[in-house]
Length: 296
Image (cartoon, rainbow, N blue to C red; front, side, top):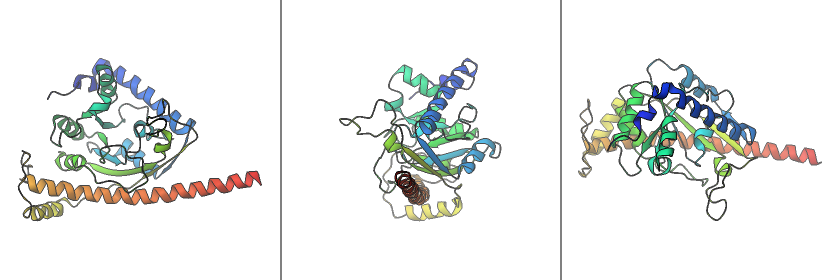
């Protein structure tokens, strides 16, 4: 499989002018939706801003978040003080090929906007995952939605797909991994607004709450040993995965390793989800008290 419009994703494409235009236009949209038409509250924003602006040279960053709507990215980056207009600091994102790359015009737009097409169901070793690894090897920032699809129900984080875990393990330079959880986007862009369809424009006067965690720590030597031990009891259901170098992990051990890492990320995200719910409910209670004061 050839890489979709990879030439448009290069930083020197037309001297970077299309990328600057798209990043600035999308950034303005995100700022308007998140701050002008709605209210966004961010907890621990400085951690993300510092990692985007000034992490150690050459060290990649992977942010992971839940997926509440089609607007999560880019509006999640539209909060105050975030450098959303700088194309050099903008994230790379894994984007569903069947949604964002349906025709040449959309493909060009999302490619210029630093998106990497991913075929859902195509496996973690599909061609475009190699492109994501190349971005990480260059010390860049990559955002993923490890749940794999939108979920607007107020329920625990679903089981995570293994793609993000595989990128963490296979990256030539171990990335910083930062979990993020948000709520409110399901009200800004509800999936079933009118006859089972989304609204034509984002809704207004909603509250968006974003909780940013702390960088995660992984004990990779211990995790690899656990994966090898666990894999001894698994059947050999081969998908044709290559041996994982330089550790020489076979396919069964890789599956176990990716599961262990995904479970740790899931635990971190679920903890943030609980915290987000508390913040959101506290804000609602405070808003209700203020409204009572005005009317009394």
